[in-house]
Amino acid sequence: MESRPSTFVRIPRERVGVLIGPGGETKKQIEKALNVELQIESDSGGVTITLAENFNDPSVLFRAKEVVTAIGRGFSPENAFRLIREEDAVLEIIDLRSIFGKSESDIRRVKGRIIGAEGKTRRTIEELTDTSISVYGHTVGIIGGFEQVQIAREAIKMLIEGSQHSTVYRFLHKKRHELKKNMLDLWEKPEE
Image 1 (cartoon, rainbow, N blue to C red):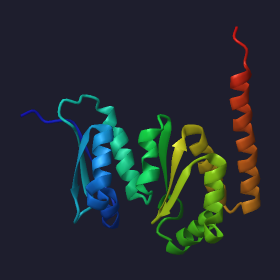
Image 2 (image 1 turned 180 degrees about the horizontal axis):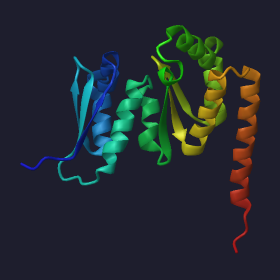
Image 3 (image 1 turned 90 degrees about the vertical axis):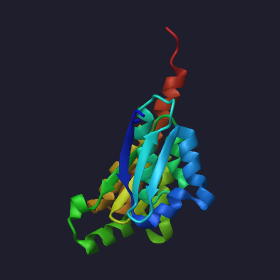
């Protein structure tokens, strides 16, 4: 028996149930959508992703690994499935430990700034950039189109560096306006 291409990713143990889903539904959806098999070690959070038999596109391993990683980093399956549904969707993970080291108080403080009162700041960034954002553990995850993720990342970086929320909102509104203008320009360009 020949071995099929596979990859491995580890997620937090408390996210394993979300990855499996009620009655194994989430796991089945990922397997079906991407032609992969997931072997999940519930006790360690280890996930081996293997290409399904008679399927020969190793690039889906990368996509499946992103979906599993997204769920592991606190995204709901619905938001993680944007990586399957939207062709240009990307996953970006900002590890706050790489910025603050092990300082729990700094990480907690900055997570609070990113989430905002009653989740307002996170929601505003999501709405203005058309992204999904998950603040979980020591990471901030962003899912969306490549350009939108870059803008959301920049806004989050501004918050991490201490910019006022109003400054970040102005930046986001300006970027949203630029993106919309670029889209209109694309539509209105005459054929040569």
